[in-house]
Image (tube, rainbow, N blue to C red; front, side):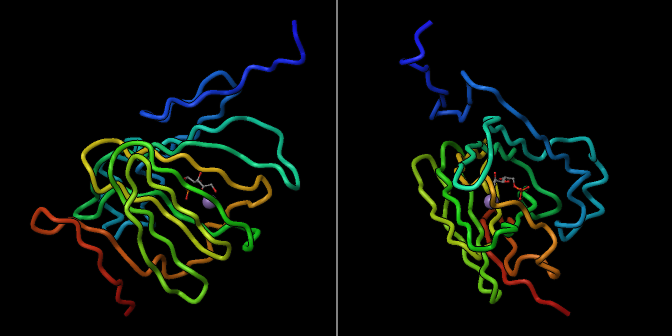
Length: 186
Ligand code: F6R
Ligand code: MN
């Protein structure tokens, strides 16, 4: 036993597989996501189908500490809308996050508190600095699993309720192409 040499946790960059550390996995099913898709009822056709899984190292939280996790967002569509994560602001609004694309193809949708929204393409090697005060959601526009590494302040928390009208952009497939559409609120 040598306390002066601690073996590190590991990440397989090509797949996002985490290992050599204590892990927590949270799987989100399509049936949990009816509220976020335009055709929410269609999620109830396959409610037990996993939409995404988040693996994270089970490390101590606290002021100044960071969490590390990988989101694996599976390919698929609900109607013409690509699979996506629920999306959130951080409860501690000022706290940002960094996402790193690992595999697959997709978009990171961001939206500030003024309601301005934009996207960045996510791919193996992409780096995304999510500022504070900015909601964020991953969207899988490809045919493979989209995996992204995230590093965020352990105190950030998640606020899933502060976008009463949802995000201002939707990403759909139309005529075989990825389309980013502004949402009209009636
Ligand atoms: C952590 C973070 C990611 C997401 C994950 C799932 O702050 O942004 O680990 O939590 O991509 O998305 P949500 O939490 O929106 O279901
Ligand atoms: Mn976050």
